[in-house]
Length: 461
Image 1 (cartoon, rainbow, N blue to C red):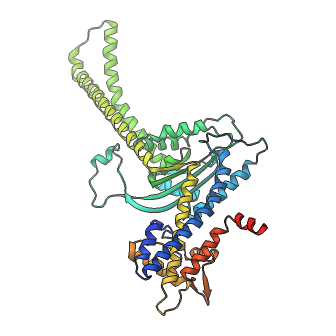
Image 2: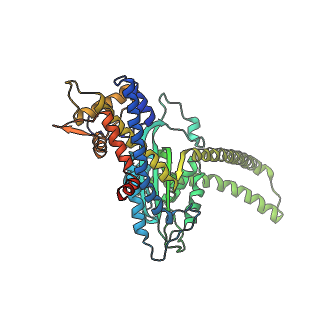
Image 3: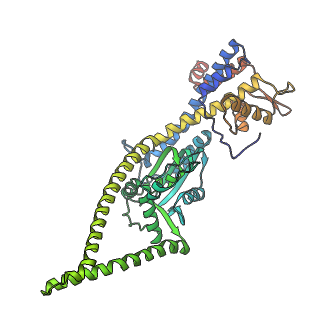
């Protein structure tokens, strides 16, 4: 089928489930199926060991930057933190590529946040606050958009035949490297300040910051020369909430959009003043008369005064009622937000590497096992071994028929892995694999050579 950028390369099944599904095809005998399971087990063991080295590299390089570390950071004054950071990013990107994550550029992120923001706002991550930002995502789907219960217009909006939807990112990884002089506490303070906002509060804040030309950041005191690096992995993130994951953003508005917002506000202000001034004149006249000891002809004021007092009383009651309801709504929203953050945050900082290693191992194993099985058990319609394109089409067809999964199988990568493991044969552009017996011997030899010390000792003696 070839590469399709609209489809995901991620295989949404466990390795164990794929192995059992392949064995249930009955293409292999019961004895051969059991041996195939052993091949799959060896493939998993080999990848587990190989990724262990990547995990150790990432952990070691990240340790000086880890804000959660409870062990000593034994780094000298001449420590090259740039080299450590580069080593960590290299290991991280290896894991992300193997786990079939795709990089999301800052331009793409800014475009997504702007589309999800209130009309007329351009939202961008404030690059001046960060030395480095990396964003990776895997999997996306459209889900029904949850209306903001605090927005009054949603209470009167007629129900649509089709609910409003938005895009959801199924996995999202964020790396934020603060500048060495960045105040970490200030970073957290602004995050907690804005994380509990309702949708309407967030909209008002963004509009206000945009009208002022952006949020005014207080200068932070220069701290340690060791930068802080945050790593976070989230699941099922609606694009409308992406802005909350980057507390320090820049909000811009065009003059036209500022006018569209400010002119109605100015008009409304004049309308309020036009109503309030006559009321204040009447009340002021009454107060002045009482202060000067003059006799007040109540018959001249009663038609004006009592409606005004009644209006103020009604406004006061409505204000109290709205405030009480707002406070109750905000508490409910904050409780819902905390629950969402608890269940959507998958891992943080050093734990992200362990999380990614597991996902990378799974993806590598699934791709290798799928390619190996179909090259072993099947041929094309002419009875010949598969070409790369035929193998790609067959595996994607099987995934669709068996599980209803439309995906873009990385056939080039899968075949490369078989070749690296020494279990691929190629002739005239057609591919096959050795027998299961030969494959088991080859993989067993690979495993034995990971730790050759016993063989070296025997040779020396």
